[in-house]
Length: 274
Image 1 (tube, rainbow, N blue to C red):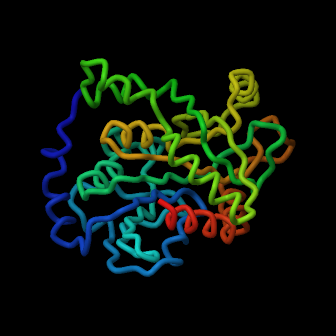
Image 2: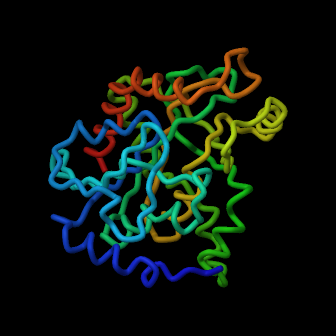
């Protein structure tokens, strides 16, 4: 069903606009194990999401509930520390709410980050991957219903992402900072459970390099709202069946801590050249 976001979240947007110290240049949605990036920039304002009307609570470990306004060099940042997931029981319009907020606050560029399971046998936990393709089979139809697409130009927003120009800037930043950055396709799964070894084999045959339970719908929404967008995945574990090791959220958080310095260095250098 088509949702009028401006009407549904009128009170929330009014509240945020009244507090916002500036119009952000870049927005970041921080994934599992990557939330501490917010502590590495100069913060101007931190808004607890539980103080905002109709904002869903993040219930996942490693996802704090804050929207931060910060600065890095001469760039104004909007940071979402606490992602909203389908598997927490929320509706689609709630899950993509941070993207809508970034858009109405005037943000033109969105960087998405996530923790993902490695499908590509050449990937290992701790690797950083630039998403160069999405496999959003289980979300595109719902997104079309949500936005009520009718014309060809609007429908094309659901296929033309991530932004090639922004991806190239990220590759350049990685090269200049000597950060090893892989590239690959991201398979979106709704969750809430991890995928079975059989499902992972199917994804591998389809060409996917990593799998996760976020990001794809946010990228589609960003494209729909006219925002340049790119995504970085931290490979935190081997997907089911790739390794004999059991999957756990604790492993995701721990790998995030180990990759923190490389991730922060890369993202900061990207922000500087945007």
